[in-house]
Image (cartoon, rainbow, N blue to C red):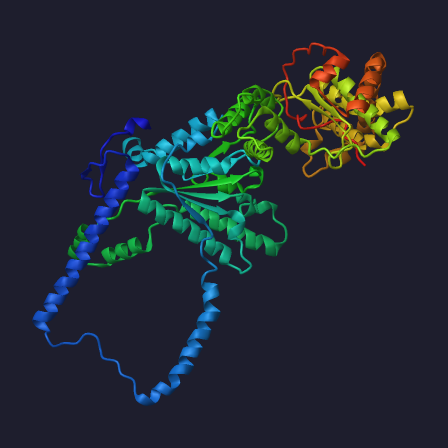
Length: 606
């Protein structure tokens, strides 16, 4: 679409309009010219009527003189009081149908530059921006049409609102944002009125500025599929809201009141008069109104909303990979004073923040700046970034308020997680082992992925289960009995085993229980005796594997427990000194985020 740049625009009558910019500027200039012409025509008509009145009716009084008898003045206070009371009762209802949007006036700038690390998204949005900028040329030269609506879908915090705002900033057009829930009203019919008012406001702004962006956040609040609604009363009300959305999206190019009035006059006037009206009042150029909706539950939207002609295109937003996280962190730190040590921490922090969204990473950098300010520093150092990561992902340490027996049991439990995790390949490296209390966690073993994972293999899932059960196994091996601290580990291990059997088809059966809609996967799997035996077999097998690893490395486990009791928290370098070098991980072609890098196996519950 950039091939159209530099062409000369045209006004409403097809004459060349030297604007030297794009279709948006051309439309704004043409609209101002035509509106000035209309005002001049109306003013000239009024002056002509005034002259004719003075010539032919010099003494005529067209405005009658109003006079009230003196006796009627006694009723004036009562009339005014009734009028005031009427206004007090009516005025609150007049604003119920107003659009609840908030308007941003974009003055231009590098909007896409804020989408750090998103090359694919930037390329896709650049095409949309070019089409908006040259929408008249696109239609005139190739017969193409810009999408009426875009649907941004993806997990929370992935930059959907930021991307919509970037489009408006790139072409300097109004950005009108509204939350879908703000359309809802307790009065019947007012929700529909608010929706109509919002679409009308966006169309009006688009006509004035050449284009406008209307952004509806969390559209699933009013766009839920009509086939999935409950009672008849609720269905009728919500279905009417969805229908109103469909009608408004289909009527983006609907004419305004003035255009309707002019068209009626032209249609009902004699041909010479109609021709004169069309000459004196040519149609104003229409702007391009684009509507963008955001949701993280696109599957729940009504199918009619996402058909062509409404939300024509769907753009998916993903959680950033390690490389993207690195670019985001560097981009955010570039606008802040940083010390020389910060660059050495960026790569490691990016690798250990798997599963975090753009918003979470931005919060991480902001937290590091706050930590630097609290310690009185003038720059952000690597230690501030690490402290911010620990605070957001793990929590602040509260010390070790345990008795000696409980303290040793927690150290054994976390040591078991660390040893099995250290000698199991493909599940990430152990970065931190701690027996300090953090919130409800009495201790933790934190692992970070060695690379981004998009799929998970059976061996990786089994390794995760073995590592989760290792805390209980270590207690049984060293202390001769387990404890309630393994409750969360057992729950996680059972969930992974259930997914292997009932969802992934990796053990025993290829039947996916996900095919049965609205079914609890765990309940459905464990209620079947054959599938329950498969799940129990996986857990017992991996429990034996964890015990074998601990038996082979019992001396290392005891050294680790002793170090934890002395120092309470050990990092990766400390673990390498105690446990030795990790085994070389086998190459794995399957990658996944099913096993989240934020999971901290070994967490004990009170």
